[in-house]
Image 1 (cartoon, one colour):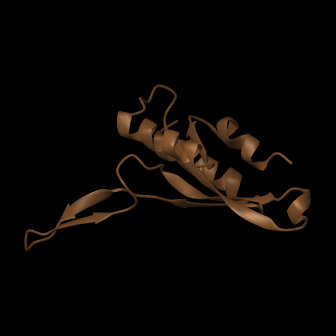
Image 2: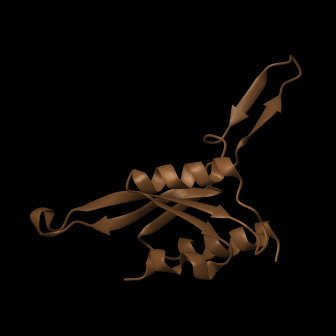
Length: 114
């Protein structure tokens, strides 16, 4: 399956869960006819899918929910993780978010486990 196919399968699997929201994050640059470079997406290395997972807070804040940042870098089974993608994932994890290198839907199923 192509990276695009894996990504679409992951989007469908996560999108059906009410506590998860993920969005496509295209990162790149475009050179405008006047020579300006227009950059789009988050920073280089950021995940293909970004969003949040709703998390119920523990007893001192019973009933409240927070949004935990989620970043999913999608790869084919043999796709290599670039150094800047690994740095992004490491920084998301250090900040308390979830960063996953996903090669199949199975790799993100833990996000929707109740």
